[in-house]
Length: 114
Image (cartoon, rainbow, N blue to C red; front, side, top):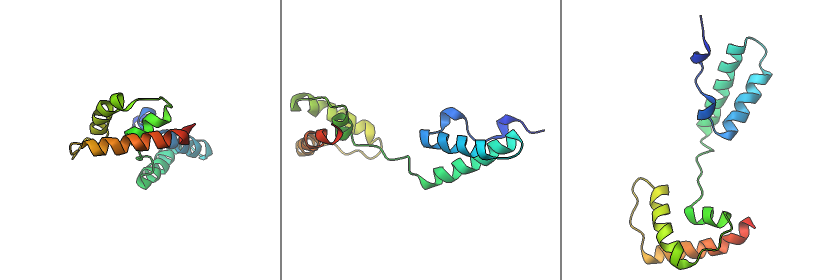
């Protein structure tokens, strides 16, 4: 006999988009609930295959989105750490010019999220 543990995903494992797709597919399925869950899982597999939820915003743009005004003296050390966290593998040390360019991008993009 089949059990709910036969389905592929747990709700906490899904992105917001995947949750919406799963819920929509499940609610539209005509048949047994376990079959509906499996059909919904198949739809989520298809969405995961598109790899559209993997985009992450760069640290300077995340900061701009928060609408905080941060002076360069505070931005520089924060950015070096945030950059390393967001680029876990193969992260090269940042130059002062890299940090200055990121600060400029942060300042210019603050109005994008106003």
